[in-house]
Image 1 (spheres, helix red, strand yellow):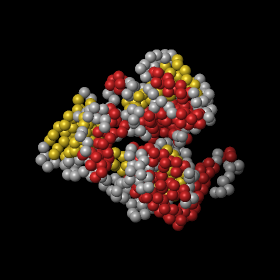
Image 2 (cartoon, one colour):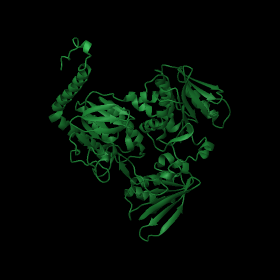
Image 3 (tube, rainbow, N blue to C red):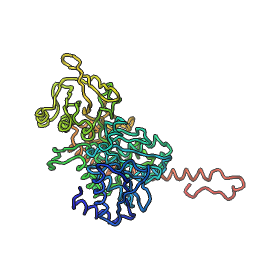
Image 4 (cartoon, rainbow, N blue to C red):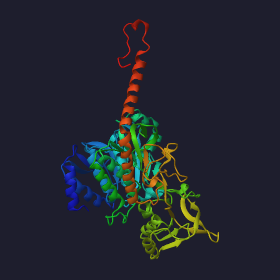
Length: 558
């Protein structure tokens, strides 16, 4: 299963392990057990720091194809049920490296939040090996388990535990359960998991409260192509830069085939995200990943308040938060997310093998989704609101050539219906005849565009009626010192290459602003900081007790 090349790479990774990690496989029999034994034995064989053993763990593990990780004989809380191959192979590698002492790449404030969570927490993550979003969730929860002894995290391959999938009516991945109850469904970032953990235990919000970073020249919010371009360009100018992001790559990470990035004939979203990360790592950029911005406080010196409670004072802000999938807003959509309604064909397509599905949207995303699904499902019906498809001709031609793809134009989705907790049909209206049709099916994939992630800036900068941040030709917003770039803005044509250019332009505009205003802002910040210190000192000394009056004095700086 594992090539010599992979095993050699693992040998190199394992060389610096600080603890011995043991894969403990539950005893018993299973059709897939021999394959898993061979898989784990091969990995353990690359280093004396790794070991494999079979053991009856009682009720600790789910099945004979479930295993846990021990570090120096101590249970780490990390479990895998199934064979973590495909996209999940990296999850296993990172798990044993982190368990052995390799630094966890979570921000310090996030680590404190997770470590402070109270109560016994058993997370189950149902995945498919073809899902490229699932590893992010598995890896995040594995890190949570290492940070907090009260937390256990279990990856479960839905394809090998169909009885549990059926019992819980799971039709989308990743699907996360906490102590047996649904915790999160569909694509979810580590930052969103933290937000949900906050709902579970609000007290952890105090972990980073009151913490401040040194004054920054530029704070970039967003880790997609626009945000990374802004950070790199700013760092190249010698500026002090911090980038805050849910995840590096942003929405691009969910795109599979990319063939229009000039000079790169073909790549994928995960590959491009990795390249963005690697390029940014060459520069002095403080990266705070898996964090959200709660709000931005405007002024000459802006304050960016993070979800962890930490605050960042900054001279300029560049907003590059991109956009998220737009919802249809019809009856039956939200109610059936995870039960037949989905937004990621790559993640959830395998759950609909041999079934009838619909794709809503005739743009590039919609037609690409139809093409991806056509090789898995029985049939795909594409619904486009306008009289003509908006997708590129090359994609339309491919879709029209597929025998199991049917395209409906000039139609409007009326509602999505369900029975026994699962989608069973879609109702749509022919906009020309106004006739209502019902199409029986099992799944609906919504691909109708994006909504800008700008709500946290309400009242801070001007936005269009669509929520896009309004900018001028230099990416300047309505608030001096705040710039915006990419899909979150009013710039036309939402393309990766355009976002990169806009991010670079925003950085250059911020640099131009700092060339004229930087010294003034430094002096203002120092003045405000000194005033704050003096105020604190005055509060300490202005009310001495009568018996100490002769000994008290004002501070010399007062």
